[in-house]
Structure formats: structure tokens, C-alpha cells
Length: 272
Image 1: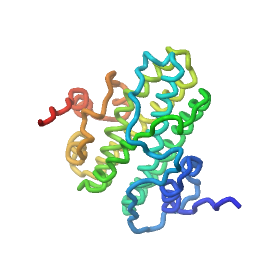
Image 2: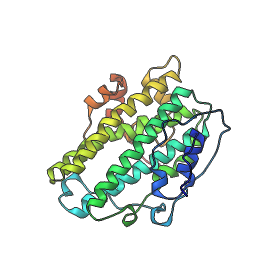
Image 3: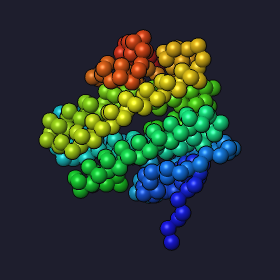
């Protein structure tokens, strides 16, 4: 007998984190989820079946110019799918950790979570078309290794919006179209279409994160709010790729000051 669908946002998010199979993690939230008051729920790592267990590292991401090789295409698709899976899990984690966030913010985070699930399914479908699965590739837990940083950050939900929406997803404003064009040049129009769809959604996600960060940071513009709340190591130098997409950032509603700050951000030299 199939398990009953969750009736609350709390139960849905726990299912994403505590069920170990991909099908459960990628089942979208029912439209009728209720969100009654709940106590904060803390979890350090997601349950993962052996075939999708987190690994210590990952192979080097193939360059767009290498995507004529089917193995390189599969490596990219697996990496991108796993990024989306971790993102979906971490949005569930945030909804459980900070249940006192404004209701509209919580509903918006749930919508983003559902988008991350959909992105993951699209990448996995393309991976399957190449005859491979996520189990065939390393699955770095990079995102999850920083969950403790987000949990400890003074800004709480503001730090989460900065790290996920305004750093990692902002960076994907550059990476998604770069790989879209790489897949297209390699003759893989279907994978290029997935990257294009993800890029369009990321613009909306960055706008959502910026809007809510400013609402939670009275008197601050987007750049000031980001600088006040972004937790290390999610700095502006990680919020971009090699090909900087100004138009996408403007479409996402970022200020010119924020865009230029990210454009010119440099990694800090390491201290020996």
C-alpha cells in the first residue's frame, strides 16, 4: 500500500530529508499542503540510499568545449543533477530549521524547492538518455558540508537567502547559459534546452532571494543587505562564472551597485 501524501509542509520537508530514495526526494509538494506552527527541526545530513550516497569529492567538471564527448556530457549532467538534488534538500532543511519565517517567504521557498526537484528530474532524464544514472558518478557533498555554517550564521534566513539565492544561484546565471551553448555546439539540443529552462528559473530565484533579503533587512539596499548577512565562504567572488551575464542580473532586479560588486569581486589570497 502506497504511503499517504504528506498533508503539511513540515511532513513534506521531513520526507525530502529522511527518505533515502530519489523518487521520494523528487516527488513535488502537493498543492494542498498546510503550514501550521511547528517547532524548529534540526538535521545534520540527508538520508541517502547507497546508490546516491554522498562521496568525498567529484571529478573535474568538463569544459563546454569538451561536450562532444558523450562521457563529458554525462559527467556534466550528473554534476548538475546532484547540485539540484542538494539544493532541494537544503531548501527543505531551511524550512524545517526556521519555521517562524513569514508565511509568504516559506511558501516561496517551497516553490523554489519544487523547481529544484524539477531541474534535477530534467537533468536525470538527459543522463538516462545517455544510458547512465546518478549512481555512475561521484556525488560531492559540497553544499551539505556548509550546512553547519548556515545554521550558525547570525542572519539565519537572511544568511540562507544570501548563500543559496544570491551566491550559488546567482553564479548559475553565468554557468547555465555557458553550458547551454556548449551542449548546443555539441549537437545536444535537448540538454541545451534543459540548461536554458534552468537559467530562466534562476533569474526568478535570484529576484525572489533579493526581494526577501531586503524585506528582512529594513533600511538596506540589496548590496548592503548582502554584505551584512552573507556567511563565509559564500562571498561575491563565488556568485559568478567566467562569462558574466549582466542582462540576467538586471532581469533579476539586482541593483547596478550589486552587479558591479560581484563583477569585480576577487578571491582573497590565502594566508600561509
